[in-house]
Image (cartoon, rainbow, N blue to C red; front, side, top):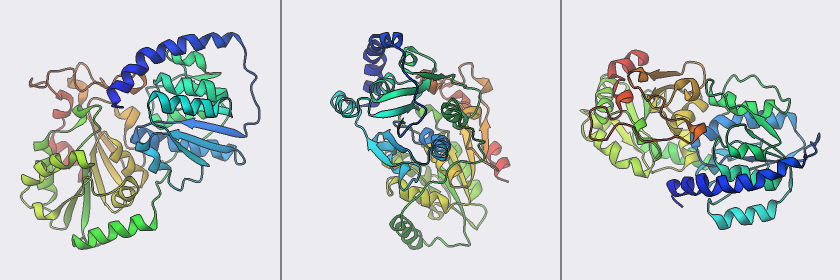
Length: 377
């Protein structure tokens, strides 16, 4: 099912189901002090899933003998490859039949369910049926289905907001860095062979650039001509090479940028060539990473690469590339609507200005190439 259709069904039908199920709140649930089986729910955002990993590690550290499963969609399952904090990754297709089958198989199977989704009703419905005790965010009709509720603090980093879900269980964790993402030896060999064929050497200063963004909000993309100017400036340093990162849908965007670069022979387009785990290693090979507010930015931050994030529709205080030496550039104060993206409210618009107006992407256009070059230097 397409994302927009899922959101539509979830908003209207899901809200009705939550309202019906909320009558259960008159029957108190006995809190379990020992949780042998725990389920986490985190569906589809690559960036948000990466930011949830510290909370998952904190949960594991406190529950070393418990079985911890996670329910995800196909889009993010690779993030949990060889993750020692998870016992079993369960992949769910977001359609009514798959959801119903999972609910029937998992009814009250778990002592504890932690719903890490910020606004979807379906995740709270699954949590209601699967868990004896349930933790989730306090806002919305969905919150009536939880036994423990947490305020969603949108004035702190999202990784801290995920940690709040386990802090309510008396689990304390001081966040210092993100969890590194793993990959296989095969992934490593594939990438190394590819880079060798492209004549990439250890002497090169490799700049990774991710100029795209997920289909949910394309207004996060910095203008094409800015990326062209930035790349030309970077390539003035003869040791520099650029690796473009993206999925297959971003291939044309990257080709258009490449076509306008003066020394395009020192750029590599990897859009759609690698799976997610291979990308973890490929991004790790970069000396510097520049990205819109999107999943690739958080991958780079997790892998310990110096990262620059470009923000407009969303706020860096929530989603900046986390970690020492990472920098977020935000100049959205010129836009009356910024932040127009509020994930916890289900608000992910493209842009409130018409596409054919000069104000479309006003907040992103306000970031100048010199702003980025100043940070690079």
